[in-house]
Amino acid sequence: MTRRVSIFGATGSIGQNTLDLIGRDRASYEIVALTGGANIDKLAGDARAFNARIAVTAYDDQLDALRDALSGSGVEAAAGEAALIEAADRPADWIMSAIVGSAGLAPGFAALKHGSTLALANKESLVAAGPLIMAEAAKHGARILPVDSEHSAVFQALVGEDIDTVERIIITASGGAFRDLPVEALETVTLDEASRHPNWDMGQRITIDSASMFNKSLEIIETKEFFGMASDQIEVLVHPESLVHALVGYHDGAVMAHVGPPDMRHAIGYALNWPRRARLPVERLDFTRIGSLNFRAADEARWPALRLARDVMQTGGYAGAVFNAAKERALDGFVAGELTFNGMAQVVESVLTQMSADPGLSSAQISLDTVRQMDHLARQYAALAIRAVNQ
Ligand code: NAD
Ligand code: MG
Image 1 (cartoon, helix red, strand yellow):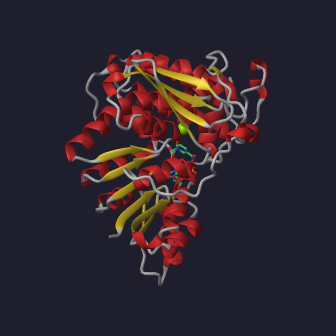
Image 2 (cartoon, rainbow, N blue to C red):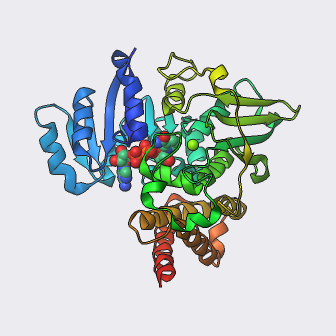
Image 3 (tube, rainbow, N blue to C red):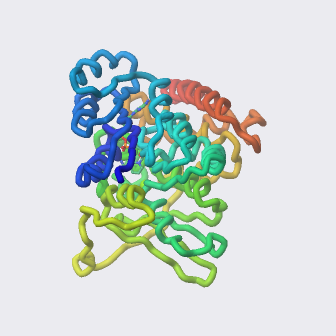
């Protein structure tokens, strides 16, 4: 029987790895929707190759180009935010949420209504609206499977175990591009340097977030939301080899570690085939060649993003949405050359401090509309903070 699949963010790094796996077993899948941004050639090329029913670009001004590129193919073309939601409304058995940033929240949320399986790479949605997403999944009987490598690793280390017996979850971090640089040198690192990851091949934004550890800070919050852990049960360990992705410590003292090659097709393939394990085209590790694995503490002076994540979890409510949006705007600033590498954490901290003056920030009940408003507001505050830093 074929499975109906939709991929949001199909033209990105996760989307392309997902298509790589699907392409190896083409007859088992029927592609409903593929979505992308401005890379119309790739989107249209894949939509044709995989015979998708619809291809959606996020940008209205790309619709004509997409229509032209798809002409004669029988693939429907659409554009814009509403079209993304409409595509998410189309029934599918397995949906990949791999848009980057908070733009992935609304389509992923809409897809949960089918009560099918949502493979969640878009960690930003859990950071911004974790309780809403988990409640929506429960309401519709939908299953969310983690795709982030660390969270897939935790999920796998939990198979057959009782979550109540978990004492702690340790997620590892490679430390990113600057893990061995003296802290003072972080003042002057460039965009180019921050965009090179020592171990993983990923989209540019998450690669920079790895260097600043904003990625790990999002992942700490993702761990809290996904597995229902308290802040003090979640630890981060710097592990330069990126082979142990996560460790789960149980209350009898045992620790289950997940080890695998740094290839996202493992986590994607696990989510695609769950609850089975399928043969995957990833490297088989040779431990005699690896020899040793290294671990060290994650230094909060070097990576202030980690400390900020703890504050965000403490505040709760809309703090995650604010944190993520301020981070996204600060990252835009760094990419545009408006902000230094260290300036990103300063801007995010300043936005969190300013918005903490609003008692509504820590509301126990959150709504999707207010998440969106808080996201907009945080970006405005971040833009002002960027201006202030530059004065
Ligand atoms: P990417 O930049 O390579 O691709 C992003 C995708 O989102 C593209 O298809 C792009 O067209 C689309 N997109 C960008 N802005 C959009 C918008 N405003 N509206 C709609 N679509 C938009 O990113 P990626 O590295 O594949 O990451 C995707 C998600 O997966 C992120 O949430 C990231 O944190 C997460 N993730 C990625 C990796 C990885 O190895 N790349 C690992 C773990 C988690
Ligand atoms: Mg990760």
